[in-house]
Image 1 (spheres, rainbow, N blue to C red):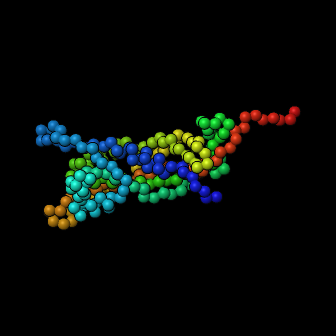
Image 2 (cartoon, rainbow, N blue to C red):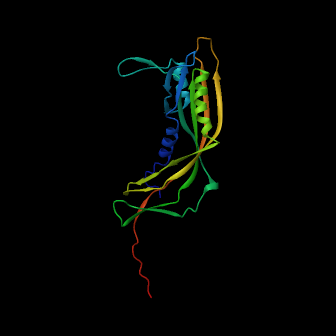
Image 3 (cartoon, rainbow, N blue to C red):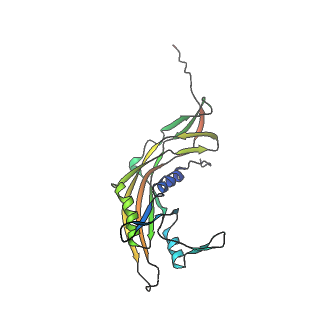
Length: 223
């Protein structure tokens, strides 16, 4: 029953989620209203505690050239916090999905119906200044009312066949909550840390193993 296969169901979902927030910029202005600088906000996969700990411990790393670089804010990170089966979207388990193999017209790739799962993501926004955090949040919230639909083309592959079964799926991404946290502990020389946590639920699907079968081209029935 349990044999190796590679569907990339979760991987494609993580890529789709991250691509929504990998092109966010902030601008800082002078007193006369002119733009002083523009910065792209870095995005990475990981827990916010890792980045906050780096800030507390000095937040510096040494690159390949031997230059010590301090971790800068603002930055964003995201992670999967939970994965739960969704009984409300369950379909007939025995229903099959078939796709022709592009390399061999006589073969079909077959798999059973996708399995519905709700995947919860947490998006963390870490800034030093309140104005930076507000700019980032204001670029995200207007698109979620409270959901935003992303279209992905899941690729299901197997070691038994070089073929691929593809089916475009619309995945609703629901914004559950927006939390804001400020850390004021320590003296005035300590670095200030502002953290926004946005929780999302992706109503996604998981795909099983693909099997290859001969395509039926002709049927003969007795008269």
